[in-house]
Image (cartoon, rainbow, N blue to C red; front, side, top):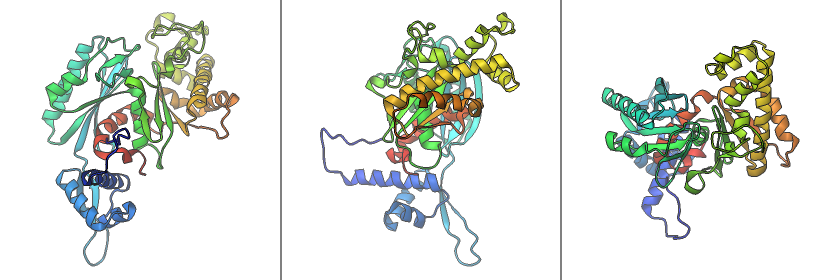
Length: 397
């Protein structure tokens, strides 16, 4: 993605204008496909001759395909433009308990989905990712643009290494370098919450999004921040670790080494802890095997203690969320995770906590992601494809 260096301003070259126009045309096709060249010209404001040159280039590069469409009784049928579904990304979502593999196309559709347990050793995880990627590339005649990887931690922007992943319990790990050398494909890594934020920009509800926070709730809590249509990464990529802000000084110990962090109070693990601390009749020996999905199922069946545990979780989600509302004042906060399966039940609890101390004249919209189960994977697609679609990909809708 190209950025203007204001410290060293220079006159825009014809090449810069060409790249911008290419991004505009590509994004209009993405959002409005199938679409004719004439309609691309109308929506973009570019001359038809310019649109024709750009679309021919995109067709030649394999990004766009054309086909006859329409039902005119007489005369030539119009030619429509669509994105080429054979431009693919290998998607990898690493979580403390499992790694999900997928193949996604430029339109956000998946053609493969596979889950394996997460190895304790990063070297073994790297080998398994490599083996699966090699097989996918060998077995397909499509074009792979790269590999997108979402991780439950932070990536150093200078070294491109995983440097902070307390729930994963891996040391500083280089996933990008070995995979790129072995596969010859670009590898893009990003924090899971940032990936979800990108997913919202690319595949979320229609309409431009300028200020957004994506909150992922799973084994831990992560936040991805979009401000003025751009992902905020902070110094060396460490921005957004609200999950490790202590809210209770003498609270439970957190995997990061502090006590009372937001994620130790409001994560899936916190809800499970609340359930077993509440006097549940569940066998204590089964605690390690009992999952958050099972807790949700119990609550749905009317289990009082399960509902109470999830209610406590919702209160803590709300208390941490009001910290984000007060500090960032985003237009929208989107929640991603298994918890959103019970969103309609617990949303009022979260909203009440946020509104209790809100000072903003306009309330921030709180909503669950439309397809939270695939948000991380879709975000890994956006990581790779955004290099070709430019900054307009996030706001031109």
